[in-house]
Image (cartoon, rainbow, N blue to C red; front, side):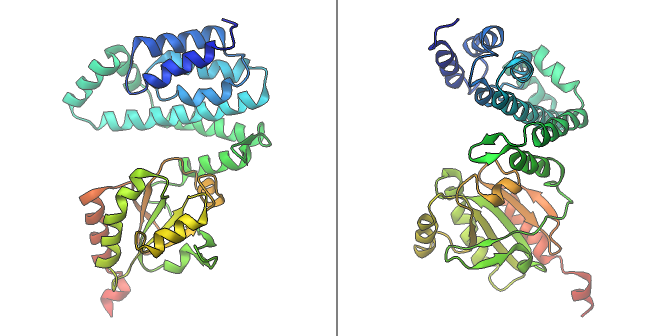
Length: 312
């Protein structure tokens, strides 16, 4: 257990098996929870097991690092990982409670009947409440801990915003930043228009795969009350400049200096691309729609004229 290569080997097993449950990954997490929660660097590793949200052993490992690891940075990282683990569980439970019986049965076969029944008995609201309390702890107890070039206070503030306010029906805060030429502009400049706000980057394959549909939307609604604006997370501004020059990107973008930039951090974005559809008043109407569903939602909102416009 004290060999310095052990934890690397265990996490290799976990990463290799992440696509689904396996005896190897389960056993690896059991060994970590038994022998290694006090090891240096375990806080950073907790995010590698929270994807196994169906297993109590994964939660045991994360909670144990938070409670027992002597290093403050490791405890801070475990605290945030546990919050994300609980949010992940809440979303899973909500989706499955709205799913068909056949889908639930598939999950029982894939994840194990006992695991699925245990999760379905959980209260998503209670999970989110505990997650919020953990993020508040990150923001205060571990505020000065630096995580990927950002303080835990900054990161947790964004996580709390995403948890509490990045929801359908909420009005979004303003965004102010600079475009690829260094010219400042704001999200509120587009108030009165339907807005598709994306968090994206050329480094991200799924983001680039969205570009053709996004270009088509920009062209289709060029003379209508619609705008597509993006928070670009490429680390080098020249990447964004080239994408615009080539015509790959035909909409205005804030350059955010990478995935750890101030706008992305403030909004708590950790999945790319993230797509947020806003109505004319800046209220969120949909999050992460894709394909035809995205086209249909934008068409509906653009066609929905405000009352004052209808009167005129």
